[in-house]
Image 1 (cartoon, helix red, strand yellow):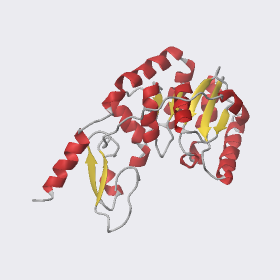
Image 2 (image 1 turned 90 degrees about the vertical axis):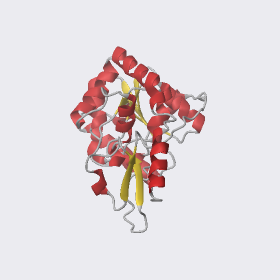
Image 3 (image 1 turned 180 degrees about the horizontal axis):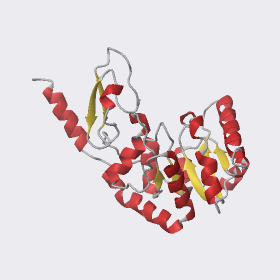
Length: 256
């Protein structure tokens, strides 16, 4: 198995779990029934996608381009109720902003439950979710590239982090806010930022996550600075041969 399925199989028939040195916490080996093989860096040889953004009428979908736009690009099931408060807390600090979620192919029931959660979370802070939260329809690859190009700030999901989603956002120079979790599945974006040497937008707790996200929304100069760092250093996570060499070495060792 590999970190695309970010938890142990629990099966005695699976021998090895291929992971990432940067993603695993210190006690990571104890989280698997398999032998853990953490490969260097993010553990993959990643080739960035080359997709040109398509023209999209975002305003027809309720997006206000004059606001600070926070991209919340994960599947809705990755957003856990215990973290719902981060969105109204950020909105209360920043004011003129929107959170752009993707409703995708998920069932109407899942979408409706998520929307009701957002309404309750914002109401707890005397705010209306309708003013801040947008659920976008399923996007084509070219529309998704336009979505990344549209955003101002990328908010990583808490507890189950973005992997490919984060990597696909890098070419667009979005500052990325993350809070690493206790399990590998909550540390993908943390590892990507670590490999790029961008540490200022890695939070250590929920309050700091809100503070970083709010500061990026309120301070356009810092937002631009962090975005430029992402754009300039993205190649550090692309086409990295180190995981391939390490896997080759391990496979050769099985012969002896």
